[in-house]
Length: 290
Image (tube, rainbow, N blue to C red; front, side):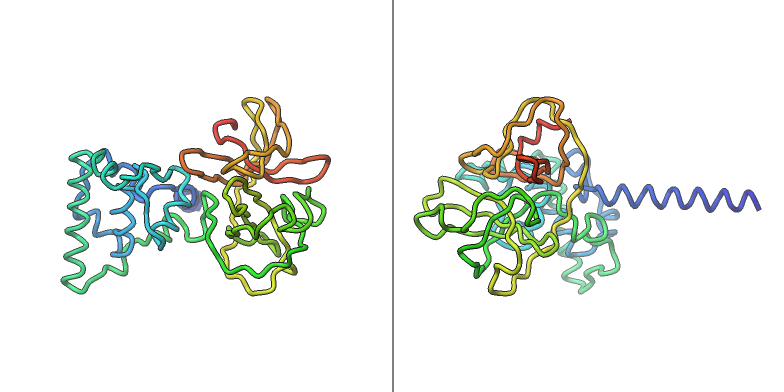
């Protein structure tokens, strides 16, 4: 009886360990840049996911994807930083090693066989099973048709009691700002406002009661991990342009890490703390956390 119970315990521990590993996974094939992939292992994946594995090779070097599923997927990976070079495609191709090109050819060949045979291997592993469709490792703001109340207040955190950036979404701008959307946190929508001349940004939350139209956006999935600052840094609601100050954080200050945000070559940590005694969320350099 004891032996049987012990075996069941071991199985449970192994299952939980594998589940936790999958939940924190950032790559589909992490070492596709350092070893040769085989056709047998690629046939363990379905056709759709092989497309992501295929593009993962290029994404490592910051390949810039057009609007669509691949862009939406890779901007959510914490390791991905879009290449700012105008000749992005050529630069990325030049960086690939012979091994990566060989893996590229192998993946391409397996996908071709799947297409020709009409067998898309739908029973194989799908990227949603490994990464998780709702797992968002980095904030991703996308354009949406947002009908907002111009007098609404923008809060740094999803609460009426949170620190407020300012009343009136457009009062601080001479012209209507460009608004992009990250997702919902309860009844609050996280948005990013860019002024008309593209020189400043405000990132914060508005309540759904301030929105006149239905907005389909993902539910934000945050980590809520306590971390300490490894140096003094500025907390800002503008990680893209002016880095305007919300608060100064000192070495050793503890914040709640929520998720990552990539802005060009810069990597930020989206964190929660307090400003003037009120809950506030903002951005600090990612390398300023332990």
